[in-house]
Length: 134
Image 1 (cartoon, rainbow, N blue to C red):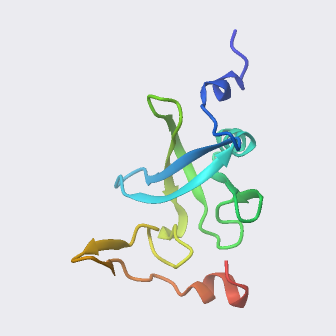
Image 2 (image 1 turned 180 degrees about the vertical axis):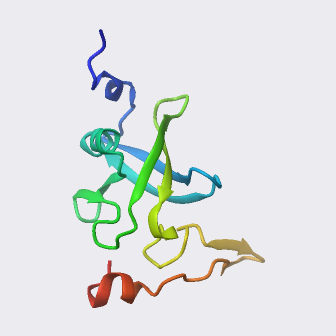
Image 3 (image 1 turned 90 degrees about the vertical axis):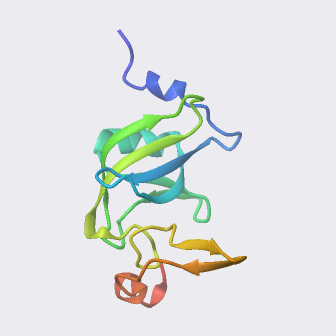
């Protein structure tokens, strides 16, 4: 019988103990964001059904939506063929994944040697986070 945390041993963690995590809308397939997860974040995500990441800037866990309300409900977790990237297929509450107030963090496209913004701001970040930022 396999221990419930044995599946974590199949993940190839970086030297810092992290794994890249791609977050995708479970219905549309659109990539919403990229983040990092440590072992505890991935275990909590699997157990709770809510996306939890490791914030490198804050040096601690980041429970997506804890301040903004834009929670990611995990519908499926996948591990790539090399075991070194995790894919979260999620239901994005509020339709906003990005701290800029957009649906996706990937809202810039390279065109003619310049980055152009392609997606509208759905909600002003100041209305989401207040004056303190994200």
